[in-house]
Amino acid sequence: MVEQFTGTWTLESSDNFDEYMKAIGVNFATRQMGNLAKPNLMISVGDDGLISMKSESTFKTTEIKFKLNEQFDETTADGRNTKNGKLMQEQSWDDKTTTLEREIKDEWKRSETR
Image 1: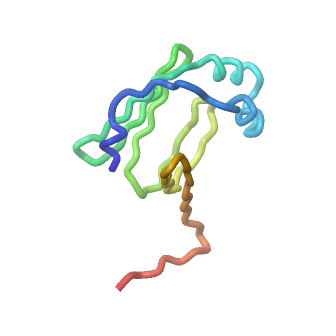
Image 2 (image 1 turned 180 degrees about the horizontal axis):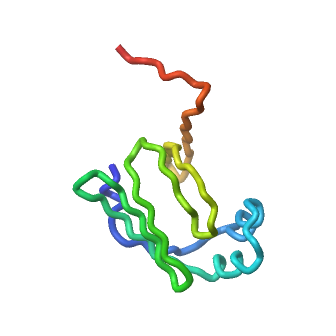
């Protein structure tokens, strides 16, 4: 449930973030600011079912609103226009973690459960 994620969260660590930004083509100046930023993330759910994720730092504030299981457009903090349409599930047990990533591709067909 999304409700367990609602509230204000503070970034504690961001491992390999500079390498990630380099790999996706973020310029040097923006990477420097990104590496210094320690944003707070506010997650809330509106009465209309929209999930809001607002990231605030001294450098930039961004906000996205979306519904679960619906693809949405996003302009990232570094100006990239993206589509978000993946469902991520993280499972943790006995000090182990696995992540399941599900994505619908155009060529895939949905099977119906009866």
